[in-house]
Image (cartoon, rainbow, N blue to C red; front, side, top):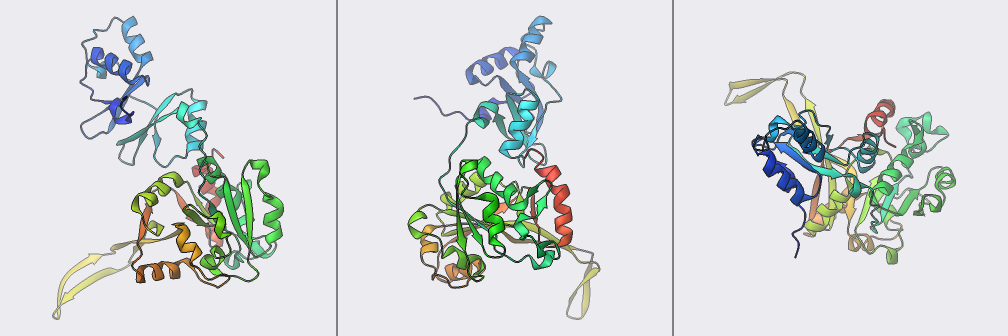
Length: 355
């Protein structure tokens, strides 16, 4: 039985000889080795082309790969989406691309042939797009917030494309305010080779109440619920995998948030000052407005009764049902106020330039 491929097998130290590197290249059959230090920090890459150039120069094959490796390799960060990777690799004629974290540790390798495979994910996605967008007035006087253009596309279209790119095809969009604007724009999704159904809220039911209107017989896999005013290049497949591994009733996406106290904080004890901390920064994990929810949770909701997801979370915890979390490290922006909407224009240029 063939051993399953592990990208870590393509990591080598700079001291490995060229002859050993050739053997490893031949065995891995991926046409690349990624050279790292003892902490897996990216140092360079070695490809078939580097080996050929070394042979032409008659470099001793017993010399270390550090003598011939590419010391300025192209790389991507783990925040890059599949579409951004694909666009970049096609534009630069790359077949492989190392993936690094913020400290330049290699955390993966992207292969063009894998990116070209179109996945198909049957888990349903529900996008909440029924809000009034009061805090974005006057922009929302004539347009529902999810349909406001960021760059040259509505917010909701950008969100939808992120999911389609990841392989999702079955969508439900919850609507209320100016619902026809959304329905007329997206239709039933057939032009995008996806399926879109609409949940019509006759009156606002909150994020949880809208879920109760989903056709129960169609929801037989964990569902991703997301607010329709968020921009993120979150890896939805990693989120799903995390949820399925946890065996929880619900997974909440959380986002790091920092708040700096603008004064020196004085700590005291028994009437005495013990120390002073100048302008400390407090760190929190906040609700990111994205959830993975088991079908059993959805089917237990009272039909047409207003309830928000945080209330559902509290109820699950009180009944000893497991609620886990997934911390978002990728780009994320909640478009709640006019300042956020202006920020989103630049955000899209930087994080979604491939769309």
